[in-house]
Structure formats: C-alpha cells, structure tokens
Length: 319
Image 1 (cartoon, rainbow, N blue to C red):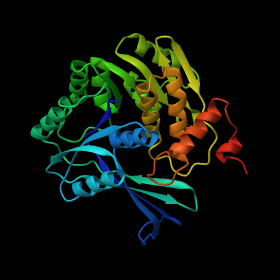
Image 2: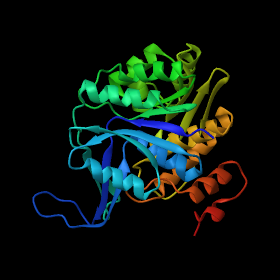
Image 3: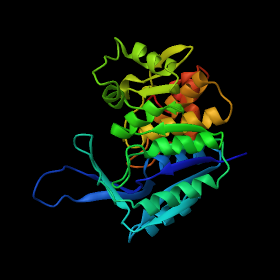
Image 4: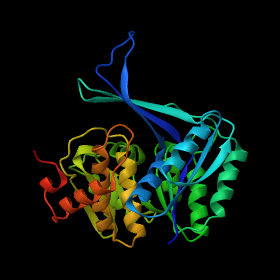
C-alpha cells in the first residue's frame, strides 16, 4: 500500500490553551496547554494515519523551532520528510474562553522561503512513490502564487492524483491551470475564487457544477461550517448536513474533512461515499479541544450516524 504524501510549505507548532476570560492589559492566566504539529498537510497526514492508512508528511521547517516540530511529529508516529530551512518555524496559539465559549486564534505569517529551499522540497517529492499527493495550507513568503501549479505538474508527471486546499491567489492560479483531482475550499474561499458572493441556498450548486464541468477540477467539496458541505462532480451536486455535536473547538475541522475524504478515495470509495466520511471526520474534530484533531472512534461512530447504522446515543451525543 503506497502512502498518501502531504506537503506543508508553511507548517506551525500549534499551541492551545484555555482561559476563564480574555481581557486587555492585565495578565490572562491560561490552563490545559497542549502542543501539536500543525499546518494543512501535516494535519491531513495526522488524520490519514489516525484512520489507519500510511502517510508521509513533507514539510519545510527550521530555525530554533524546527526541531520542536520534528519531535512533535515523531511522538505521534507520523513518517516525515522534513526539508531544512533557515527561518524559524512559526508558532500559532489558540485560546478557548471558558466564560463565553469563544475561541481566539493567533496565526503568524511564518518564515520566508528561498528558491533553494523550494527546489529541495520539489526534489524530495519527485523521489517518492505515491498515488495521492495532498498540497494543503498557505504559501509562505518568498514563493510564487503559481507554486502549487508546479506541484500539480509534478503529480501529473508521476501519474498521481492531486488534492489541493489553499486560498487566495494561489488557489486562483492553481484552478486556472487545472489538473486537480480534489479541491476543498471553504465558502469564503470559493466566493473569492469566483469573484462574487454566492448564496448557499441560491446559486452555489450551479457555480460548483460549472467549475467541475470545466475540466479543471474533478471533485469539488465546499465546506460551509455549521451548514454542512457541498459535493460537486460531473454527475451532479449534493449537500450534507453535519451531525449535531457539542463544539469544543473548530480548529482543524477543515483539515480533518480533507483527511477523511482523501483516505476514503485512496481506499477506493466513490466520491459520494468519501464525502460522508469526510463530513464525519470534520464533525469529529469539533468534538476535541484546542488543536487536537479527530479521533478514529468518533469518526466511525459519526459515519454510522450519518449512514443510519447507529443513533446519537451510540455516539454519546444524548444525555
């Protein structure tokens, strides 16, 4: 079984904690600290491994904080291919405010990447054997907005399928170039891509179908937060509402969705079947605190709930 390879160009050490209340000026005491390896592709690799399929996380890391990220991944048993860089790997921080249930997330821009460091990442991926390549996350400073287009061409040369989850100019450039098997924007990212607001209840399906029928994207999933997600293929579009779960943190829900989707597709599931598992994985991530991602047992229980194989009580969702 070939591993799913993920690429994270701007990874992070994700710190999460809780505070009773957040206020300006005075010290805010925080509790229940945890540190996780983060960044889009790394999170996807964590989810794929959690669900039981091998994954290799390729990522750029360095400076004083790079070894910390390496250690966090090693502790979780994730196979890695780190690309050394000169700059310091960023540290993001999220704080859950107990009094209000609100979550505050602080995300630095990260280090600049040199052309030599970028070429080292390309060379490393070219040497790997894989059928699925996941490029996920923001582009770091120093890289062209067409960098993911180069990744798409690399996957094409190797006969592999590309999964892309990014935003802004990098998303627009990649879609314009095509060659994407699975694209996963949020609603806001999709609206920015098409250049206008699209109502979830009016026009979203038509816009999504137009994109997949253009041939530039084979499978399109758009995550809609508490309103679920939309799947579009050449055969049509469908929406799925997530199960009603108590929210502890939304951090990593989108990456968990991608991880569930690519895991299922790599296992040979149809896009519609994979879409259900992806929705379960995204919802399962909401159940966990801070920067913890979905847990295998929650994913499969929620998948059973969505497919009618069990009820909410079986997943511990009723009193």
